[in-house]
Image: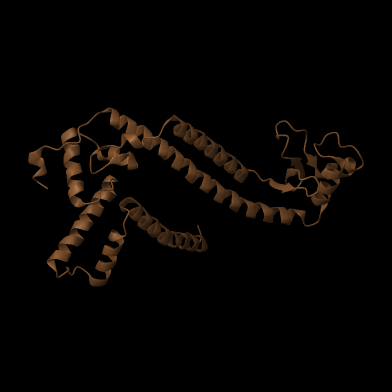
Length: 278
């Protein structure tokens, strides 16, 4: 590895540091549903370890910090610190994993410490989410396949027919590639234009247009530029579909865990002697 390669590697690492910090900030805000942790860090950055002089305000800030810590590490979005402590004690008494409570999402009432059974969706909603998640997964796989292949899709203006092309060949997108006939190759253009189109899935007029593209002087450079641009679009669309897929799967998972949790019939009550501790 030469010096230039080391320099480039170091530059890439340095460029990733701000992205990692941003991802960390987004994770904290998403988990805690609050900017308190970031504001607290900003305060410490400006004022150092200097404590807040007013005891009431200091107690409030400390309480909020502890509450955000509970949200961050448990994933449960308790409204107050007292509510968080009661939930912790209830979980200890009933041997409940708080991560399971967090996995229920909005289907679990933190204040009442029980599943909101009336909010659980029915079969039609679950069926719709299953179909949607399957659709999104297929879309992701198609986008990944399009990212890996060197072909670029084009549409003919006259016939509105879509075909995929490489530097040396072209083939209609429909019928499917595994059912269509042999692709139209650059070396075959003269023969096919003359009238022999039996091996291709294009019409004679389409062959004329496609062959002009394949034989054009700047076709190779144009194709590479289009391929690069379209891959960025495909990548963005693949990431978007991936996000939708995980959202739909997450929704199904929350319903499943909430129903399993509800079936346990755990009492939401906390013994009176424990309530006096809060």
